[in-house]
Image (cartoon, rainbow, N blue to C red):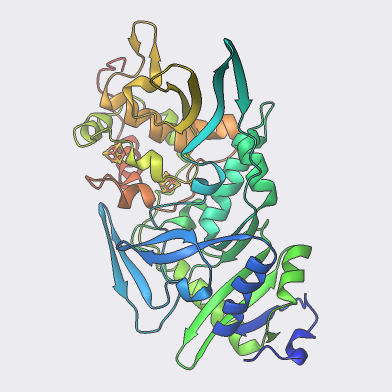
Length: 394
Ligand code: SF4
Ligand code: SF4
């Protein structure tokens, strides 16, 4: 489909949306760049689908899918040429909204006096292309955590308030996905600017696009697109419904908050502690984990110092260090803290689950620990009569 004026004259927000081809996707990236956005989207690089700055839609991973399993991630080629038929990769959008390293201030000795300088560089104006429904929910979770309380994170808020979110619904779940269990996908929820569903048919590769905000509608009006036909809408909906039926994992059908609260002394925690390396990979890849620490550094002269904020992990011994030692010294207590927070006490703090079912922690755990398998084991234990191990206090 060409970018002719007739296509551009289509009303921007018909309720049934618009359909565009691959040239429409190319135009979308061009329009976003022209509007001053830093466009971040998926691209195939270094043996993975990574999120990186896109200068053109040619950099999208057309024809690349993924094979996911516990502790395993592989790219594989796809015959249909789809760009978005690949489940969550190693990064999430928190890498851009809540960066792993941020300099908070620096100080210099000038004429014997210390002069402090806050890092106040204007945040980039991001357009996120290809946000998965589970990751859209994860952004909403981080919104509540980092900006929903008394203390608002200025770094996150500045980046988040300017960000444009373009969601792509899931039609190809991974073997480690369980968004259906968590109610976060594979169809898109609210609070996006544009949402699209990819239909990668031979000779008819197209995207069904709907706007979710005035800015999204404005951008959509600039694209070469036509009113969505019933066949495309039906095929897109059927593909998303089929994806829901092909989830690789599922959480046990239980009140997870109650399950976590009622199994604190289950012997299963010793079992998982025997496998967990406490490496913290699961917290680094999780799109909702938000903990940070601070680090002060100086140069060799001692005249220049900087304070950095870095991602931290509840699997680090230092994380719970109080005077005298760490509160959670054992692997058992650290894994239990992470999982019971994600699935249980997160509700008490933030009013929702801390897990959106993306499956990243399963894929990127070097020993393949699977949060759904651990939850199922705890559930089985409670149903079998729950004979607690001796509490170890850890
Ligand atoms: S706990 Fe695991 S599955 Fe849940 S959101 Fe975090 S990384 Fe994804
Ligand atoms: S569960 Fe896996 S990824 Fe997480 S700390 Fe343990 S070994 Fe590392």
